[in-house]
Every structure is written in C-alpha cells, then in structure tokens.
Length: 338
Image 1 (cartoon, rainbow, N blue to C red):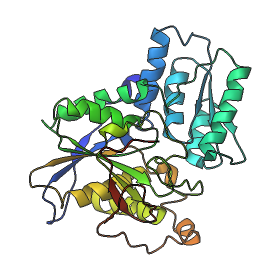
Image 2 (image 1 turned 90 degrees about the horizontal axis):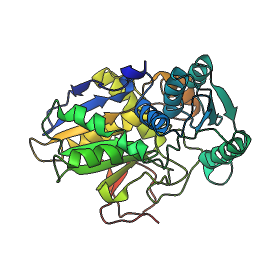
Image 3 (image 1 turned 180 degrees about the vertical axis):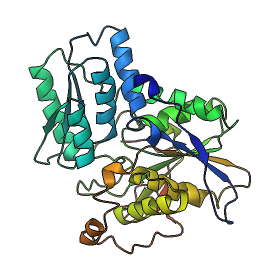
C-alpha cells in the first residue's frame, strides 16, 4: 500500500471556447487516501532512516483530514501505533477510516486562541509529554513536507514538457511550495497562484474559525508557506467553493472536495485570461467522499443557505490585506508575511 502512493493521473480538462490555455489537472485525490499520503510517506520513512523513529515508537499528528489518513496508512503499515489529534469538524468518513485502520483519536471539544488548529496543537504537546518517545511529523513546519512534492512535479514533467502556471490550494503550505520549487527548475518564469478560503489567515485575512470549507485555509500561519515563491492569491468563500466543487463534478466528472473545486474555478478562469498556448497545472488534492454530508447534501446546503448559489464569472482584484468576503485575488509578489 505504501508503494501505491504517487504516480497519480494527469488529465486535460474540458474547457469552453473562451479558453486560450490548456489546463491539466493532477489527480492527487487518487492516491490511496489523498495528496498528503506523499508527505506522510516521506516524513515517516525519513525519520526511520535517520533513527529518529524507532520500531516501537508511537506516531502522533494533528489533522482533521487527509494528513491524518496518510499518517495512518504509512504509520500503521510500518507497524507503529498512531494517535491523531483532531476536532469536531472531522467528518464521519475520515473518522471511520482512521478508526478502522487502528488509530486512536483525541478530539478536542472547545475552540480557543488560534482556532481549532491552535487547540489541537496544545493537546498534541500534552500528549508528547505523556509519550516522550513519540514521533511528531509536524506537517506545518517539517521541511520534508514540501520536499515530498518534488516527485509530483517530476511526474507532471514526464508528461508535459513545461508548466507555465501552477494553481494550488494552501493549508500547511507544503504542496504549493514544494511543487513550485521543482517546476521552477525547468521554467524560471513559472507563475504560482495560491488558492485560499475567505476566513483563513494565511494571507493577511482575519480568521473565521466557523468557515465551512475544509482541506485548505488555516487559523495559523504555517512555516512551510513560502511567500517568496507565490505570485498571486485567490480567496473563495464557502458558497463559491461549494458551487465550484459541484461544477467540477458536473462538468469534468471529478468527484472531489472543496480544495479541488476552488482550484478548478481559478484555473478555469485563468485559462481565458492568460496568453494563448500557456499550460496551466491545477492540483486536485482531495476526494469528495468526506463531503457527502455537506457539499453533496442538499439538506445541509439548504440549512446553511447554500442552495442555488451563483459562482461569479470572474474574481475581484483587490490590494493585498484588503479584507475580502467573496471571490477576490491579490498580487503577492514582494509581500513578506508578518
């Protein structure tokens, strides 16, 4: 199963007549559990090779989604006990996967400073005191996170000779940073477009812990976000992200999560804005199975006021640090995170 990680399909999206560029989607959602299987594999294998993770050591990680499943896959596959610190936002499908794989879950029950991620990290650090020999992959700051995506970039370049524009969602910052660094070795003029959620504080926005989107965005700023390599950032709100995800299923037959949906909306729009012949790479990290009770549930969307939502045909350009509430984008080049 560990050897099944990677070598995911690269497909060309079907676009309308307004498109001037080709858009290729890397289907990371077709890893055994999702894109972060790559991070778990590289991080855990590296720790074992360096003697940091010993055969009987426990692995502890903080996650509410695909990283948890990746750690479960690799950690349990190598014979380690795995503890996952998560929060009430964890969906039933992910929870069932983790329990069935033999993980122990620690679900924090009260939000605090730093949002749910901050509370989870407090709990995780208390567990590290209880289990001093435990290994913590540290997805938000471990350099093995972005390095694990060099292989993904090479897989793309084995199919298409050059990528002009990369569109990727941002959570821990590892995938967009790692993929961009590797692609820039082949094309130094690569444009890097980040996709985030309204209510995420990664790119200078106020935190809204109650946002409905999962899989991208953050209530803390992870060290693995390389701001120097990112040219622009797009934010989509919950309504727009959900609608884009539904459109991705209808138009491309890809049943994915809202990270992929938001990336799809941005890449599709860019295909009509950039110069003829440019090649756009869109990263689709997550499957739709964990969203069956939310994005793909009419009753849930009705309850949240998300039925019959119109996705704007184009985003609004705003100066960086302008507070946004709907699909907007900003130049990032030269901006340093504070």
